[in-house]
Figure 1 (tube, one colour):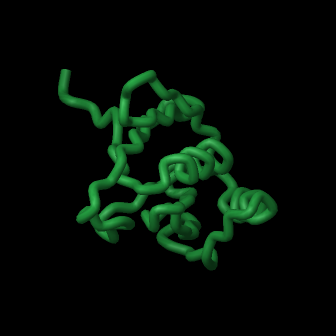
Figure 2: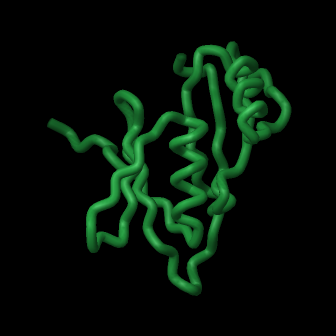
Amino acid sequence: MPPVLASLILYTRKTDEMAAFYTGHFGYTRHDLPGDRITELRPPGDGVILLLHPAGKGARQGQAAVKLVFTVPDVPGFAAGAARNGLEFGPLHKADGYVFANAKDPSGNSVSISGRLA
């Protein structure tokens, strides 16, 4: 069986804010183990587990080379609901047969909602 992308490490200085962001807006569940520096965020169904790792002093936050894309069937509806919960997405963009919108998480990472794979 070929390797499968199972998790993504996000380096952050804002673990609690990041956990609240992904649990509150995207339905992830927070899991902490005693003595473990990493906070695990599990998706509500199939999907990639997010691992929040404390960032070192020299680590750059919000890498532009990575974007977390969440597939949603109704991008405008999800964006409107997110706005009511305090997460503002940018304008809706129309691409080749789908719509997407962008935002940033508390550590400055690019986050997108997209209808491409819905």
